[in-house]
Length: 294
Image 1 (cartoon, rainbow, N blue to C red):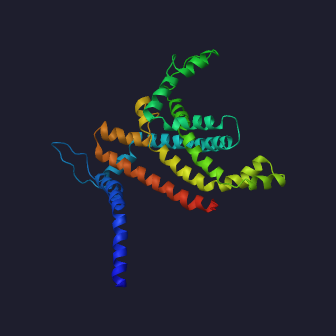
Image 2 (cartoon, rainbow, N blue to C red):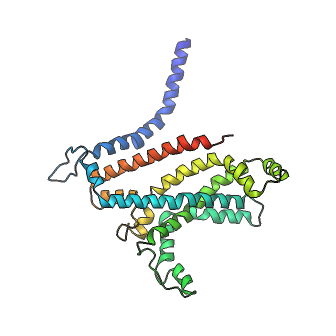
Image 3 (cartoon, one colour):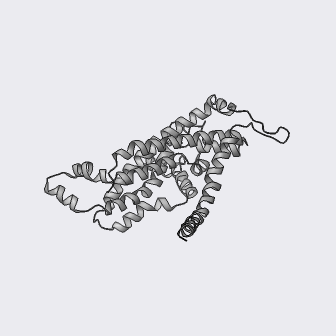
């Protein structure tokens, strides 16, 4: 009887896990395996079916100058958005965690860009960056500065997209830091004040170490966001000019739906998955040692 009851308990547990397991396999594991398999085949057509070519797509990838340009663009994009978004989110969270006039309105103002649709955000910033008639050029014209094509200049298009992305993401990250700050005992600040610690010393030695679990979570999300930008590029630049704003996921989108080369897009996707997996391992195994869990 006892063994029968244990068996029923195990069966009941597996039945509870089955819906989640089916979704995980169907939408995560199977697509990943299928993508790896597709990357080993040639591009197929109606008169020339796809055939197994092994690592030829990966060798072609190494000789693709656009791929290396896109990879460098994505590295700069990540370096521009991730630290800036996190630091700005911390500053905003510290500000709205204090008793200031209109605190609820300030919180709402910080969070509003996050709830806007991506296409709407891209169109708003398209108006900001438009030459001559855009908001930025209208403001700079008051100071005698000539008009500039922000999205048409290879030297300014990527920084322009970085600014827009930081504006969109910082408010989202602020919510997590604000929640973490409200869970920190105020007695720590009072004790630090009694010891004569400055605000900067208290933040550096007490507050920021306690925020490290939140920082790890935010960092993982920021890294993922830096490699999945498509909507904004589609509206603003389509990767131009001369691939100066092209990023890895948008290049995958172009390869699959503009050039109709699904196998090359699969190869690029495998590289993207490997990069994300490598960064996840670095984050968990190196940063986790510096985290103080409570």
